[in-house]
Length: 600
Image (cartoon, rainbow, N blue to C red):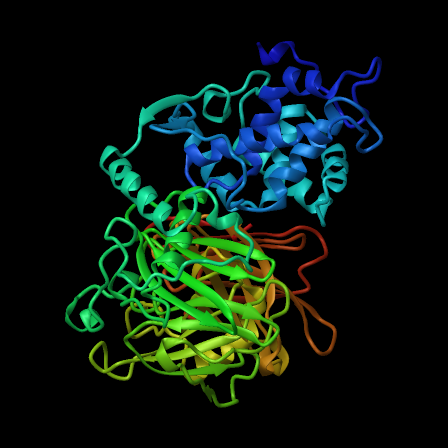
């Protein structure tokens, strides 16, 4: 079936004679599978994404006989598929198509790498907005309408983000699907044969502990479960680490955590957790048990395979599994994991090298931290929530002197399993080399984070580290105080990231974010930046303020009233009065000749 022969349906729908649900699904199956494939997250690998895309479309069949969005046929099918793809990131225990012995993947194409990276950085509704526009040829308004029917909370924003990607990515004509995104044209290869052999033993071990290996994630929470006291077979989880392994290694991270919790010898519970991960993942290696215990009456199991974290809980409403990346954990990024959240707050499991813990309010930098108890490594509930887009309550942790003398650091809750590490890069010192990021626990760092916390480029579970780089300070005209210029950087566990420019007003006011961009801006691989800001003095005089980082040697500014092209002053800042209300352009040139424009 050639996709070019299919109609290009819009929101107004198919019209004419109404087709049966099955006929609609079969006729448009390839397009619908691609829609689901583009919308689903890419962090589970292409095999899981292909299988999940087919599952989403096939599970839409039972509800396609009625009407959706006032239309029959393809528009109704499209909305049902979108709802299925957007509903949840993962479906532990869902009735996915089962594929044994081989791995499926769309044909690789080097030209798809950039688009893949851009798609991975977008939230699912924005990916869906992109898919609707590139697959069905909808304009932004039409895509927003479809997203609204699919239950997206901010459909216009998602459609706009999809349109921006469509313009930026310069995608080719998708009248026929590019092979890299056609989940109906796939290649096959054998899986890890040694791992498959181990998994066969895993399945047998789990079957002994349970009545059936496919049942655990679906078993009702009130059912009777055998409580085995024998140690777990090595094939189910890795051998238990020594409690003090971290003291003798040069590489700290999740891999050297010991297994903790009063249920760590409950092979039935850990077997159910491992089976749930196998159904949803599977893990890339034999899982390592980090914790198995009961919190507030709820069994909780925490596992890692070296690349991901898996948290399995048996809630009153039924078992649940949460997965998160954790492939490069270290002394800070591998220092805490969220075991449970409820109305009282979040409870963390802390690394064995943590000597003391406290909580801190980011918005109250002058308020002392509050000690936090963590018997057995599990903290008391950490209360508090954050405004949307801002980091949540912060943990201030201190490492054991075996690791580093007087090493304290901050972690902030972003809603995922692992909190983000907060760092601070102070403003430049003309007499010294560029300063690297440092722990955000000093008075100046805390004050700057109090101002800039809600100006971060993103706040989500995939963020590994947040850095606030104060690249310039500027004395404002007419004794207006001192303005701080910052670039805030969010780095993900997968190596991608984004940055935002912001100004930190005098007197500790909240930062104003100026611009945001994905990529490596303000990272160690792109250490130069420039920014502009319009400011009005107390007497009403308007100013265009410009600031650049320490290696900038020349500033070029064009306003409706003038043009400047001059060496940068020692402060790397400018204040131009009465710049006019029209557009302005700012450019900076480094000593090495690199030309820079503000983040946009």
